[in-house]
Length: 211
Image 1 (cartoon, rainbow, N blue to C red):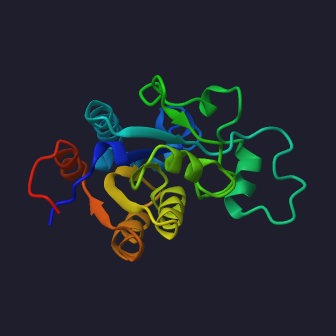
Image 2 (image 1 turned 90 degrees about the horizontal axis):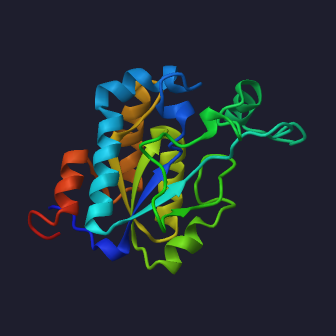
């Protein structure tokens, strides 16, 4: 049964579209490049963001905390990712790596939510408030990484009562096994739909039978 999306009730959540993740020369790009190229990540993200805007679907930017000197150093329990950030300074504020990829920058009136410190775009941010204030009931998650921030944000969205869509080839991870886990093992336990970019674009155009 095909999914349908009412544009004014739907948001694409674009998670962590930083140069460090998505651009040649980015600090984390070498770790995701193989999977990203295999699935056609960048072209698929461009297609989804462009189609969403054309269809009147809201694009919401869900960025990770941009590293600043002193971050996490006094924390009792920084997680493994945060410990890595302390070493490599991923997404450092006021650096090229901490800027959004040039193809994925907010347009006029698009929401950029407060930066998340760990993996969920909802925890300690204004994402839920922004979605509620804009009447959103359906969220489509794209960006990085499939098995961390995308999964955590999607699970949290489900708990809050949103309809959650994952997109298999509009995300990436460090290993194919992580993608398999995200979409074949874990995703079906919380996501209402797991689509390809092609299937999503068809749904955003309103083609096919209603769900």
